[in-house]
Amino acid sequence: MTAPTLVLLPGMACDESLWRHQLGALAHDGPVVVADVHQRADSLPEMAALLLAEQPGALLLAGASLGGMLALHAWSQAPQRVRGLAILGSTARPDTPELVTLRTQACAMFAQGRMEELLRVNAMFAFDPAHGPRLLADYLAMVMRGGAPALIRQNQAVMVRPDLRPLLPGVACPTLVVGGESDQLTPPECSREIAAAIPGAQLALLPQCGHMLTWEQPQAVNALLADWLRRCG
Image 1 (spheres, helix red, strand yellow):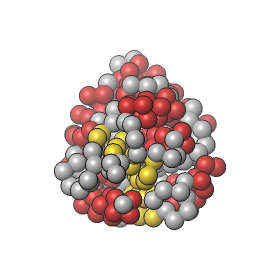
Image 2 (image 1 turned 90 degrees about the vertical axis):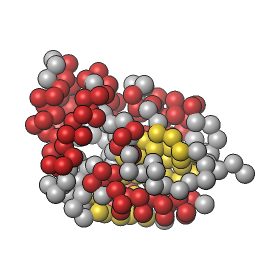
Image 3 (image 1 turned 60 degrees about the horizontal axis):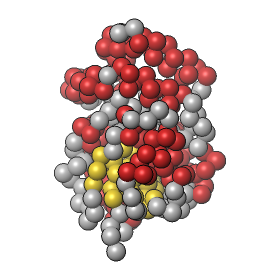
Image 4 (image 1 turned 45 degrees about the vertical axis):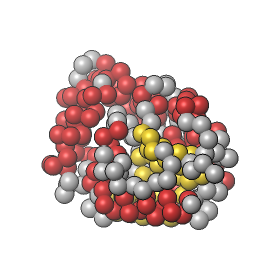
């Protein structure tokens, strides 16, 4: 029997470098790919449909932040194909009106050419203070590579996402939920909520860790993902 494809899904404005510590460390019998559908579609349902079209067969989906939302959307479209879910630093909740307002204002600034200005003011919120200073330059470079148009599209996609919480009790595949204890963008209660709603889900909250889990605590994330892969068989 062919082993499922392990698909790593980056977060908003992120690329394959988000998974740089995982790609060489995860032992998997089947293919491993980093998807970029979030850069090529305008909504989360469209991203999920594109992912499912481009990656045939059984899938193991590991997503960070927006990638976690995308993984849940892909599961909702083809639950019979998704053999495992790993949701890192993400949420199943819709945006609040306050968040929609903030994203709308940010998108206007990005369109005005003020992307780097806004990022430098807010980027440290993505990290635990113990890690931010050494990772900030890499993070800014990654986001700038994506460019303002992609960041605007991804923010717009996230702003209109539906509430996925009613779907969570139906998830029947092995599920890992990981959050950072000091994540200011998707606080730990978002991870707790997902794990509590999915039957049998494993929850791990990492100390001294913000939103960028794969960079801030790579060894802990790798160990959790390796155990999840074993559970997925």
